[in-house]
Amino acid sequence: MDLQFVKNQSTNSADIFLFDTIGGNGIKGQTFVNELQFLDTLGLDVINVRINSGGGSVIEGFSIFSAIRAMKTPVNTITEGIAASIAGIIAMAGRKRLISDFGRLMIHDPAFSNGKADDKTQKVLDSIKASLITILTNNSLLDAGEIFNVMTEETWYTAEEAVAFGFMDEMFSTQRAIDKVAALETSDILNIANELLIQSTTPIQTIKTTNM
Image (cartoon, rainbow, N blue to C red):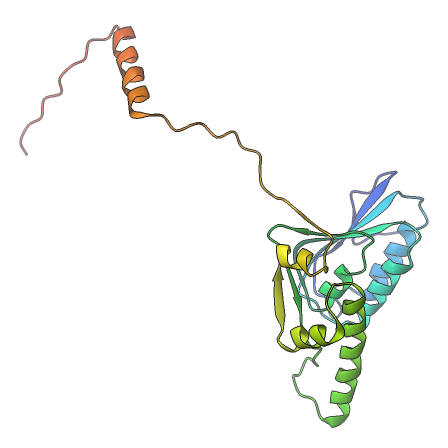
């Protein structure tokens, strides 16, 4: 099978990347699901869905969310940058949900791409919002009323906040381990300078300057 989104596949694990808009000219939901289902046949110990996406089609996102939840193989979701809109919903699907320390989660109301909604289409949007509220309520510490409000306000969460509100299970650090040299005291600098002068065999010459 020609795998478009799968990387780092081994005998024990595989990473599958959600690094684009969902739907449209970006990630096709059915293609992503097909690759997930293929990985599920390999007897892996874990599959990591790595996320950095601003969202996209709710319908295609729902198919990815449902596929992750239906997998026999444990699937972790790892938000490596942004998980916004429907990508944030997909991030809720993981067996274990991780987010980088600089990562951000955003949830908001669903909307049509043209930004306009008559009474009929508004009913559709309200129904979709109810579905999203169910998912977010089932996968966080907030109740339905609180979820309704944060969606209406379009809310961005830091990694720490996402964990605190139960949207994520764990934050991982991107801090590099660097050996920091202790700052030298003035006396240390003078001692080093004196040692260098004593050890030097080259006489120090005076540099003469001329007026310009």
